[in-house]
Image (cartoon, rainbow over the protein chains, first blue to last red):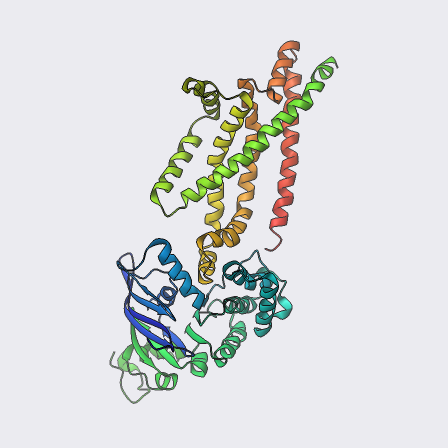
Length: 276
Length: 214
């Protein structure tokens, strides 16, 4: 595997009970790439993300994050050895959650330094220096001693980003980072994410933020019904989507309202009548 | 009153023994209860079933029977235990079953996202429990655990049936000697209430301190 591949997903399958949510996903993310995953709810995009760092255990398939490769299903390691492999993946791939999931009993700074100290055994002094630097990077140096309950949603999410960065990951996974926020707070989080991308971080972002995707994504991965339906650079994806379901999705997301009307009555926007 | 003259010298000792029984049973019961909680939440089915069985049996049988079993029953198997250790053993085991359920409620109340965040930061199960889950679970567990502490304090009165010289036995002895049962039992009831009121006030302070970040 070339050294520049940060994440490789091969043949990923995941069921929740009777419901098959991921029906065979193959995906490769290059180091430094920003991949935005889009799709309707239920398409499996969040499950895909959560399988990469094993918050959900895949049923079948192979996940490779940097140097660590895990074979899911009946082969592969079990028990403690498997747990160690998973922790190794989580060291390289940090996650930012839709609900922030900050530790409420710790201040912003304590949230950020917790993992480096507990997991990596970093000294408190070094960890605090790191934490202050990261909080400064996300623009919250003055909030270091505040508890999450005192912070706005946007501030909490930025602390969460700093906390993810504290483990010095190779990749950051974002699970709809702005979906729980009031609209006016989206921009501060997206700006932090833009800066992160500009600094060369490998990012996989599940989001509905079209403008962000247009600005920053190297590639859009569009999912529907548990499979990847289309992959293209944003310039191509947003102007000339090839797949019918991608076109429908973009119509709904761009809000021109035409998705509510029956197909025959829709005006042709790209010169072709949708083959729906 | 000559009653007070009679009772007072022994009251101090009885109070101390009552406190000793209650506090030590609560502490030992908490340790046992924590182990039971961890077993109950374990990935291993056998541990889970053992914990469920333990809680069911201990909660489902009367404390008095448990005390009598340990003090009168065990000697038949060759194990004779003195009254105070026997009382503490029974109270601890009894308390541990209830306390483990209180701890479990606390742990379950911490939302799943916290465990996921700890996982994503590559914390191990033990690390996430120690640094993230249990500190949050404690806050939820304090009210029911406080209630159980008060219940254990009152349950110490059952130790009187196996000759432990605590408050209830004192009241009974002096009451039967002077026939002033009403006064003695009321005085002792007041002392129990006083002990519990002081601990409840402590619980209130603890709850406020734990609630500060939130």
